[in-house]
Length: 376
Image (cartoon, rainbow, N blue to C red; front, side):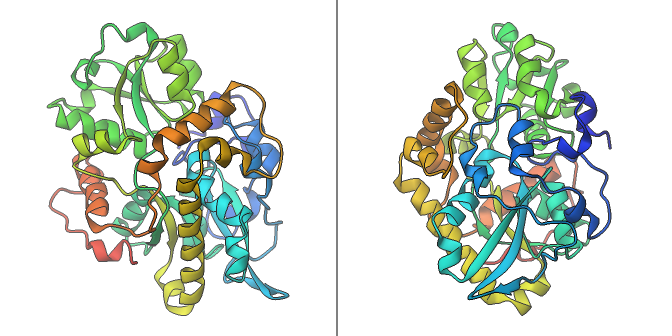
């Protein structure tokens, strides 16, 4: 797979991508966690202007050679590693749980390890480098479909963090998904959640998904879209607000529960806490403790304003307009994005499976046991 850093002229060890972008070869086993975690500075420097330093401020990084598997005792706290993608909306529940002390109150010193994408986190989980990861259900479904056992044990977000928006220069010509035939649409990477949802939208509009050219842009989506080098793109915040202010047309916003229900029939299980079946069997107390902490974090997010959520960070925020944009986006979307009870809903998981079948990633006739994908 092409390294997304090739498009940014950044050294691979510092290339930070949106969720699901596989910047690295799927290296085996322990090398994943030991060679490619991020420092906080690396995440911020190469995140393409993404908003917060503070939510990354308390993130520790496992030193090479440190075991992050079942956890190790440190005084009265059990230390464990939790790996996940480096994307701001995804990390909020995990960082809030850490900063508000919810993990510690449950007896755990949780080390948050920022990976280059969900694929890398899943690889670390399957190689036993870590026992817990935060990734989308899409990757759980793909892993199980390939015979690799992974289960989601708590939901941290029930909607994808993507919106399909046109370039400002094409907003007058592209008014619906059907107008994208023959057009170039930017996605983080081919085969990831945003690309999958684009194909799903095409099928629903009676458009051949292959008639729309998906262009893998990695972290360059916003600049490429504003220049008009692609006709439309799947973007996140604050890019969505930026493009909209420049005149781009929002075709579908999956961060809005009403629109997601209109296009997918309801909520679409996205981020969550994932582990392996053997961990569920041998360490159920840790799963319950982490799940309770994340539920408390989501409730905290829902009970506070975007401005307060931003200020919850222990260190200074990145200066500039993006801070206010992000706070406003949280106020607008948090009720739709973050479930208060942490429960994984079967019907939401079923929509992920159906979307993958519709996109041709899973054979239409293949039966996927939903019980093998999650447990509450």
